[in-house]
Length: 402
Ligand SMILES: *Cc1c(COP(=O)(O)O)cnc(C)c1O
Image (cartoon, protein in one colour):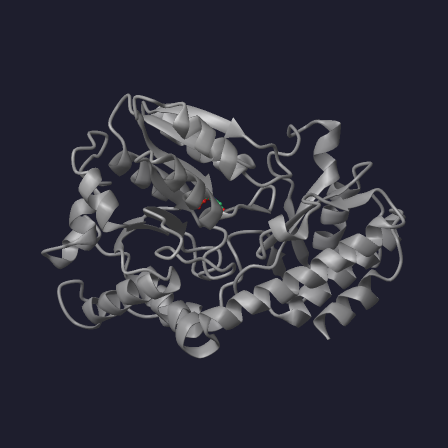
């Protein structure tokens, strides 16, 4: 590949992939300290306020369990506490992450029934209801749904799924993966009737990877007491209602992550405000979408999810044909210091089509200049690489922000 001027990538790099996301300097500074006492003092106070803030960010009064884990660990935590070996789960799949949660359950010994809605459309509540209605023996313990599937950028309508489930009278619990949406897209655990919510630190919460969270409704806590897949480390019981500080973490606390998370939640909830953060993500996403629409009018370029109301606000999956997406990613990283996300689960790695997909993250500590900068860099790359594209994308993005 001919790469242009050589040194325009120098300067502060920008990782515009959907996790890990950009970490605020204040979060890093909060973590930059000597190891604290884990038996008493500021860390204990910090943990109490972090737990309270984790409830606020999910709009819930539910119990919260914090794990030293990434999102895969949080999936497994939810599965291990929800199910007994041989129980049934119904999983709505709308991309690679829905499939990931399903296969994580399967490997634990849970009998998984998938409803695959493809990679470009929302889960249909009616089909979930039909699957529950067909389960006359009431064997399905829980329905697992990804709120925003980070691979496809499909956003599912959780409230509508809950209503459809309720209409069947089936007792299945509703468990939701909000790893890519928490702090970015509106999410109301209690109002939407979510029983178990799963998230992690390194996306909308702006903290390094390493913390996984599971929120547990009273109903789920009660109904899952006998679940026999739980193991000492993943058991949510003591973590959600610890009698001793160490039970929060089943051992040593994730000391520095907690200080970082405390700072991030203060920024999100007390300074910006959660609703303002949702609006910011929506506005930045709108700028990205309008740019892609303009590019697509003059080239083989398209957003993955055609219906705007079905897209998440934190990440945009798109296609640039002829391997353009892969070449553009390489160019942006080498020539401009911007790393875009790979297309995940859209085509086999190594296949020709693999180079047709990319993702742009606008998740967490991201503002207008960063997103407009990414779009401008992408346009420069398309010109340099002679990737056919429609004109006016940057005008349209600026107008969307204005
Ligand atoms: C990132 C992500 C995961 C996986 O999280 P890891 O920390 O990479 O294990 C799962 N689900 C969704 C929706 C995600 O965005």
